[in-house]
Image (tube, rainbow, N blue to C red; front, side, top):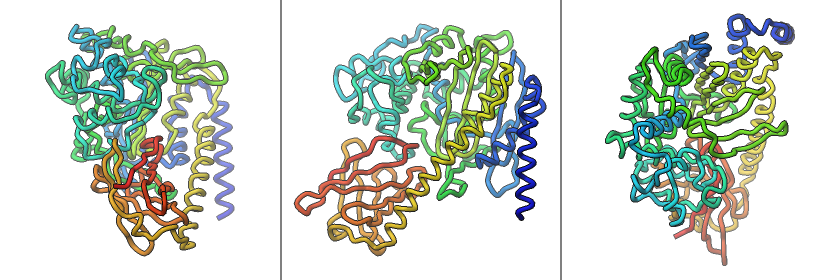
Length: 504
């Protein structure tokens, strides 16, 4: 066994050295397949699909790996993956197209089309424009409110109504904060102006004219599609198939499923000023409108800046402008990268939600076209991510080990039971479970529960039945020997902001 292990290491070192010396002009044709197959193994990604568009031609359009762990069904160029927040560019382009048709202005007030739209203060409500919705500057923190909405039973109308209950972390327009619900509101405006639901308008004005015949706008449609990938996540360090997320209440922010073939058509059209052959499908003015910087997102130590346009991140790279976005939903992550001055577009779709392959392979491909030395961005990121994952696993193990000590809570278990309320989310109910455990149920996630195990005092280790929502320590607030509240924290993948539920 050790001899085989050393042999494999020698092979990998040889292949890595060979890759360093490869002719960069032939990286795509000669080396990319091996590079991707190795990267899928290293990142523990069952399957991926990649499309590269250059100078108006499809250079690569191919599937790698398998659709579902444990099955031999291979991914091909037509296999559907959820693209998550890469849906946002479709929504932004659709609204910009309506502006080009003089049916709205991006600087119109949101309340002109959605009279019931409200934020947490009247000034912000009165000033908010369609542009504000599409560039994440309404004052919310990144992902703020998503625990309430994500895979919940709330309708689109419910989600928009609850935006008024969110206590914005920042003053209006003062800071950038990634807001999925804002894109839902934008999608509802598209419906009001066009007279058609967002999903119908997207299909009729973008998907069908571009020939994206396999693409489905709603998450509910993926399960019944023929050639589809399964969703996967890491649970206790093990790769596991998980259910498809049902997020059509946030559809304009992240519900589209597509393939390498169809996304290649999307990218090619965007790089060709909105034309398919001689026919203009998307007005060039609409494309330009989405690529204008609106907000500064961040900077790096080398002096580079990242901005946000409308549905796109905008970033400089080696003197070239990248127009890009990533997308993540339960079981899937994806990336779309455009380098307009190189007439280059790259699509990467994967069927697990815990990999940085999508943000690194594109850079190695761009480096090849720019004739830069091979860096292997994927391996660099892999070491960072593995260390982070190991720290998380160690922390969760420490919590689990503590629960095995049978530490007594400060009060009787009955004192923690009952109904609790959060103004934004609604109600949760806590009952006694097995042994010394508590059981937490969620009003708007009826299929989900959390198991609470005592850690001593008034702290409990919470494990969600849906692994996407993660694990955390929930502290209860006690005053005069009486439980008054509990703080609930879901995984950062869903939302960063904790929720305080007051006991009724």
